[in-house]
Image (cartoon, rainbow, N blue to C red; front, side, top):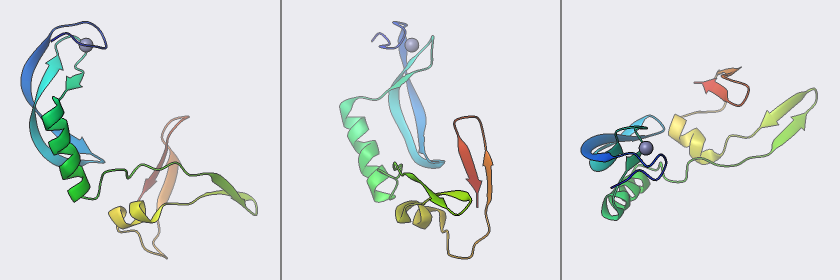
Length: 107
Ligand SMILES: [Zn+2]
């Protein structure tokens, strides 16, 4: 097949698929030789989604609104992400900007 992103040639490979740093396993895929874009067929994509749901990773990314508390701004961490990170009240974390568009919280 041709790559949708760059029109390059793809080759069949087995690739490991990770979500949020958790490996879901290795799956057959078409990988672009030029830009490395990875394509899974429909059946494989379904298998990956099922595995992701089993592991509680599916839909873990959430949009939240920035709030204000006194002189600080606050971002609530959804319960599902707190559970995934095993984050509990009173835990100490380190927060820092990773880039101008990403924030990182090390737990
Ligand atoms: Zn490509």
